[in-house]
Length: 214
Image 1 (cartoon, rainbow, N blue to C red):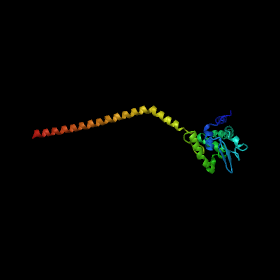
Image 2: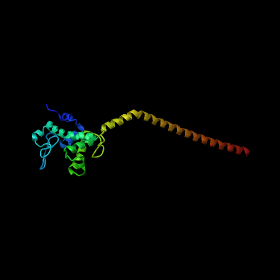
Image 3: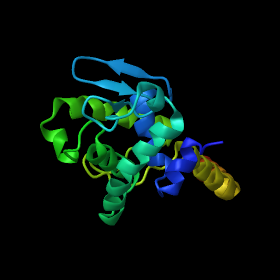
Image 4: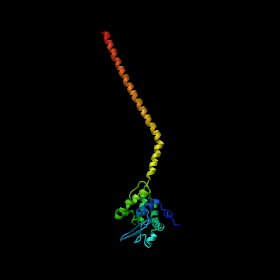
């Protein structure tokens, strides 16, 4: 039995976060995907073009075999992946670099984003596939993307852990503050009542003195 697609890319040292989104953008993981126009005949998982692309010299039947298609794609991506890693690229920036330096949809590099309509149209699809398959936020600039993607689920777990760790302390502080406010309020009320009583007492003494004098 032949190698799986994952095993083929692993043998080249290329992670899923790089090849997975490219495959999803090209064929949605359908090994039988086929597109023929006047300028291309693209086949299989990575839509290898038999009319001037990586599919030249291969039959349609052969390119529909996942192990053949993935093997060709992995060999094409490997040099670009190594160069991208050496440049310090990570996350979506690395996936983008590999795609645009290996032939999906150009070999003109990420600079093609500035002038090539095909690449400009392809880029949002690649971003969407990356977000869906790898998860998280697209980091860094569109051309370099040096910030790794961080899974939304991991962020939520982190926040939940923080809430669990500090939640009791926060509630204790809130309750303590509430008690202090209540005591301060009672103190003010007692002070006010005391002042009223004193004022009232003084008034009565004055009246008694006036009556006695009269």
